[in-house]
Image (tube, rainbow over all chains, first blue to last red; front, top):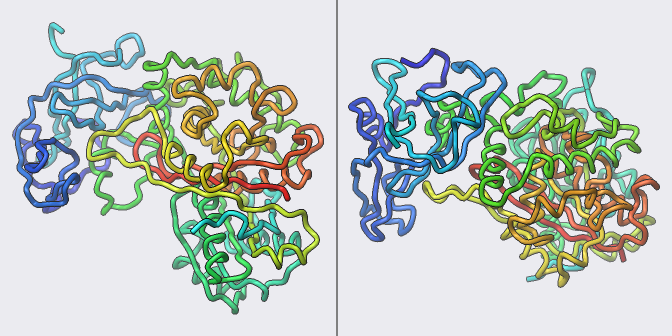
Length: 137
Length: 390
């Protein structure tokens, strides 16, 4: 369970599937049926072609560390210093997240390192897709 | 349609306050508006075009137009692209004037985040619950500072950029700020002092970040015939470009900014190239902002920004590209958390020959002002103007 204080996402009709999946430990992305390209965050139309020819699919949960910072100032819900990161999913899209099960130091956080998703509950309704170093990588 | 040469900046005023405990935001708008009118030698009732942003109190331009007593307005524009808005407004005002939609445009900016003790850069700021990306960013502790630092980290990784190179940007700004009596930070700093200042959002240190200040500024823009009837030096709008940088549905690239599109548009319209520019006002919310914009504007190759800014290359009288000779956001001020206005104002000062003598670029006839508004690492507006002394 995450420490309290983070702003809590409120599912909308276009994002409900994502948060429902997260609660079940599934990282759900969408794919444009016209181009075959995965995209994120959720939306009910293709950002490439504008059509509704889109589908939901489960991502592998594998990612690499694209960039991060170590924030040293107080933020509600966090004990600084904490790392906020952009990870690149195996399927292509990049998303913002936190890195857990890892010292929050430049020595431990190496760009392009292998990561895996680790869903972490905020409460009974919302789980956030956080990432941790891949075991054995 | 080209706007090149169809409008002139005839009034520019920067509020001297940096902490406005005893003034309202509306009052600051009035003080900068009247300051710019006095500079231009015009009156309130000459204004028929008004430009401001969502940072102004009220609904778009309505409440400020009412408060200022602007009764002759026939053209309004409250396009809000964060701190870059006021650079963009120069372009939009020139377009409106070129089309005959108005004759004399007023652009105002004011704010008092410092007096209000706003946690500007290091606490989460959401633009509203309906912003579609926010639920996928804010819960992870996104702040302004770390949405910029994220770019610095990747830039360092891909191009070998160093903290010391970034520090040179702050060092150059401080060399300029020492001569500005209104600047918040007038002490000249060294590279060592920057890299040894406390970490805010690693890899950005405290001295990689701009100041938080109150204040504001205003501009008056008009058509050539009116400009030439006034007594101020002729500062012509020669080119303008604007763009948005998007996240591209999950395919954001952290190593470049919207300047890669707004810059070439402005240069093409102006008919000049980066090496022709004698002075540049470059948005400096953070040191990395400057470095990436310089690359994207074409002042150096992508990835070479670190080498370009090092060793004093941005210091007036020392380097090849004097920048932010007022001290910029890093040392002088960042009114309302929006630095685009002061970027244009210092460029106007340079072209008029009215910058501080210690930082004035001799014979400055061609200048650039560039702004980035929003978050460098996610989505932002980008605006570039090229101005010429005639």
